[in-house]
Image (cartoon, rainbow, N blue to C red):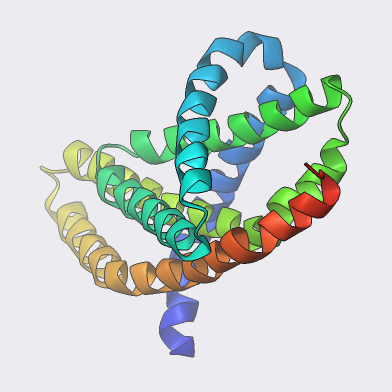
Length: 207
């Protein structure tokens, strides 16, 4: 197992770096220019609040876990699959996730809340698993997008075409293994977010 995990990391590490930079860029924009993205983020937050309200009405941690895990896994798989469309979807998701996180922390600071404490107790426990996993899933989407672009650009060059076919074969072979790693990480992240994070936030922000 260690061999294919090493190969999976080795073949995608530069795409992971690019994905990390993309999310950090979105985070920086959300922190520094919240007023510029206010309308966009409010639309995203309204959807998040609707989901949160539905989960709160159910008041069932197992149901919350199932919803969080299912949505996160679906999102990651879609980033990988639609990455073949020149990585646009994967890059967009990464940037918007960073933007949303930066915006929320910035507006909390403006309202008098402590964004550092909220991040430590409300994001970090599950985010330490979830955020790297989302970036990793997006990195595979970015990789597929790069391969798609190169395939179109170099389709008529026989030596390069053979090389690209091999690269596609390797990338697609790694797909189910990547889904296994991503699913495992998201499983534990969802457990923490469903059962532990609410307890930490209740202690930090008592009702």
